[in-house]
Each structure stands twice: as structure tokens, then as C-alpha cells.
Image (tube, rainbow, N blue to C red; front, side, top):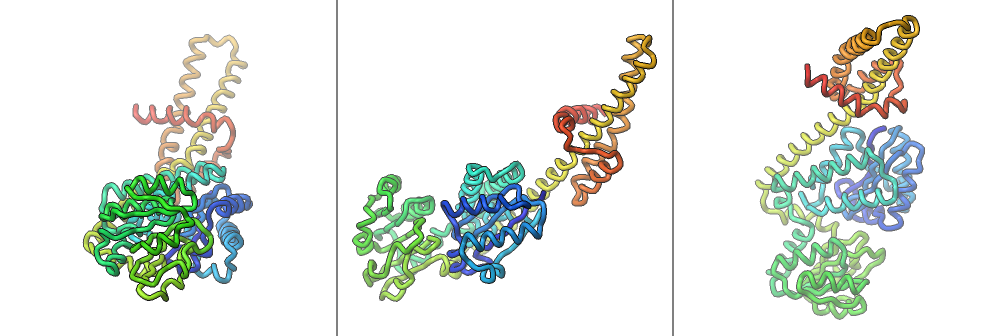
Length: 440
């Protein structure tokens, strides 16, 4: 089994296409189960955000899995394969691990180092766990990616070098409105991105914040955290007429803010939703500026000013990712050979017990003390003969071609590393081997 990633992101596809491919809610759950039901897929998780749609899977056949996952993305998004295929990327085995660690560290985000991706990956992990589509391989890999992402943000300035999408949006807003302190802000939605938006507005000095959401109670709770007020969704047009700055990010599938809701005057609308919350026709209104994810791709780099700090942070994070990938792959390769080592020792133990049984049958009058001494001697001889090759094969297994050494052992000794006895014995054998290594 190997890890495979099939997806598309802001780096490979226009936002308009990402908007069509993006899946959430029940559609995302259906995609997870559809992928897992494919014969060559054992585990699956999907990350679907405004910047990317990626399917992570543990598979046993590369080409068949790529084809199946690509087709299922097409079916569940409604985007024909001929429109989708040119924008898809595929990462496999080592490259899949590196890609996920880079994503979690913010290196692959539209805005460098943004911290939202960690929460998005964590949500994807939780959903896959709840739906039962995750197994030990992907679970451990994603957990490690989250740890790598946290380490990257803690040890470097990557999150400071690249502002969040909201931070970039506010920088663009100030180019239109001037200083945003003293402006009236309207936040449409009450999810995680809306909460980040409201908090960012408050930190920027905006004191007049209104929150509108389909579920009024959630709007009230979010508004209270930033000292603002909540309004009913039915009052959205009235609130728009009084707002200078609007940030919208809902989970709606249709447009939330239409052109006839907006009064032609100086105002700035930031649409962070996928699909769009704001009707693009709003751009034609005099004085109104609309920035969405597509236009932010051009403005994000300009909005970041600390070029030297950004470059230094990127180098540091890439170093962390490279080290963590190497460590993960080394441990994973070593773990693959462990069942083979256990099976070898288990088979040797069976041979020893069988021969001792024959000895007792042939020489029943053998003194008990002598019998114990003979037993210990035979076991010591077998352990010493097996010690060096089993330690060595574990070391060799950490190399990229390490699986070949385990395969050679299985062929030479006719081993089945999946036998129940070998699996049950794994911890005992590893413990005994470790004690012998320490004693040498």
C-alpha cells in the first residue's frame, strides 16, 4: 500500500474552476465513501478549501487509483473530465508525504504561511475519522503533518511573513478606503473564516462590527466576541447600505449579496467564499470595489511587503519539511520490515522447540539440569545467529530500496509475516532484540 494525492489548487486551476469542483457537507461525505469503495483504495481523506481540493488515499495500484479518483472528482463536482484533467496534479509515495507536509506548513497556500490551512487539514482529518474512511496509515501521516505545520509556525516567521487572506484583504481595502479605523464593517457568515475576519477587524482597530448570519444565534455569539452586534439575515440589504467594508464567507451554494442590494457609493467588499457570495455584477456599480479569491491571487503578493523576512522564513520551513519527511519515511520503511523480522524469529523459535521436542523423545532419561542447559545453549546459538542479520536488515530498511532486503529475507526463509503468531509476538521480539543490542 502507498499514499497517493490527486487534486487541484490555486496553483494549477483558475478560481472559477475551483469554485465548481469544491465540495462540502453531504457532497464531501459522499465523495469520501465513493473513493473508499473503489477496489484499489483502502483509506481516504479529502481537503476541500477555497484554495484547493485534494484527495489523499492509501492505494495498492497507482494508475488504477489515479483514474478512479479523477473520475469520481469529476462525477461528484459535475465538471467534465476533459475540463478537469489538465488542472489535476498527482503525488505518490515520498512526494505525497512531502506535499502534505508542505501544505500543512503553509508553503503551498495562496498567501504564504497562512495559519488557516492547519485548521482545515484538522477538520478534514476529523471528518474522515467520523466517516470511518481513515485507517492507521493516513491517520498517522496527517497527524504528523499537523505536528510539522505547528512546528513550522512556531519555529519560523512564516505566519508573519505571509499574512492571512483576511489580512491581505484588509490591506487592499485600505488602498481604497484609507485607514479602516472608524469605518463600519459588516461580516456575513459566522463560520471559522468569518470568526477570523471579525477578530482581524477588531485587532485592526475597527470598533463598529456587525455580523449577519442565517442562524441568528451564531451571529450573536460571534458579535459578542468582538464587541459588535448581530443582525438578522433579512436585514442584510439595510446593513449593506450602512457598511463601508464588507467581508462575506458563507457556505451558501447561491449568491448571497446581489447587485440590487448594494447602493452605488464608496465601499469595499471582500468575498472569501467558494462558491462566490457576492454577485460579480456588483463591480459595475460606481464607487464599489469587489475583491474575491480570484483577484486576490494578483493582489496577495503585492500586499506582502517583508520580502527578506519572507524568503528567510521559506528557507527555514523548507528545511523543517525536508528533515521531517526524511524522518517519517525512514521510520515508515523500518516499520515495514518489522513483521518480516518477527516472522523470522518466530520461525526460528518453532524450529528450536521442535528439535528440543525430538531430543526429549529420543533421550527421555536425560537429566533435567542437562536438558535445561542444552535448551538455553541452543536458544543462545539461534539468537546470536539471527541478531546481526535482523539488526542489519532494520538499518538497511531505512534506505529508499530497503523493502528489497526484507523481500530477500522472506524469499530465503519462506516467511509469512502476516501469520497471527508473528503479529502477536511483535512487541516481545522487538523488546528482546533491543535488550540484546544494549547488552552487546
